[in-house]
Image (tube, rainbow, N blue to C red; front, side):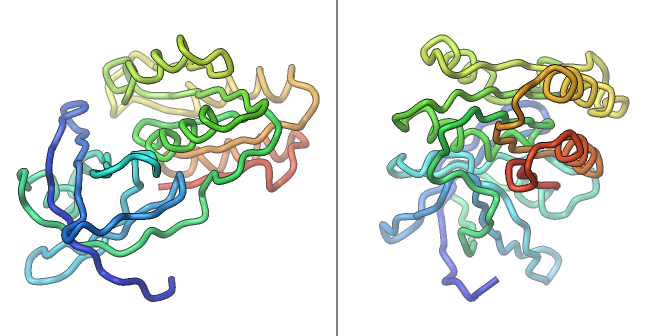
Length: 239
């Protein structure tokens, strides 16, 4: 990373999305505007136990929105960063650098976009899909969203609203109907992707964005690239 100025932001609002997931709505002090591309993240500087820990969180809001911006994160068991953030309240301050990252969608291509999300990995797709749906041109988009249960699907009402209002957007939640510790995207996502985009789909001209947690993201990437989709057409981010 190159050097970047440090920003300070006030927490204006906190929303509990699920028992383990929260959205923080932040406003940069001194009226500064945060410019970013859909999919980029910020590096937060967290004062924990006498140290400054750096933790990256993706921006969940749309670049064109005025005022506050949003980050959405889950509480990681044993994770000091998320534990610290979950202890904060409205009006507290946070410092960060950025934006960073190349897992972005700026100028869409004239093709179909498939977004494959695992749990909180859906966060970067919110501004990406919003960018697609407000850009003129034939940019159909599908969101395939895997989660342990329906209650774990973030922004569900928003995806459903977009699907009703936009003919070129479709939303398919893929839930395992199990407790989080038993959840596996190998069981939920891999068979679906293999059936619909490897065995059945032609031609191999789509753009894929994959985001989730751990090794299964790489399995999905390799499945699609091995099926003949171009390397640059299968973008991924593993958390």
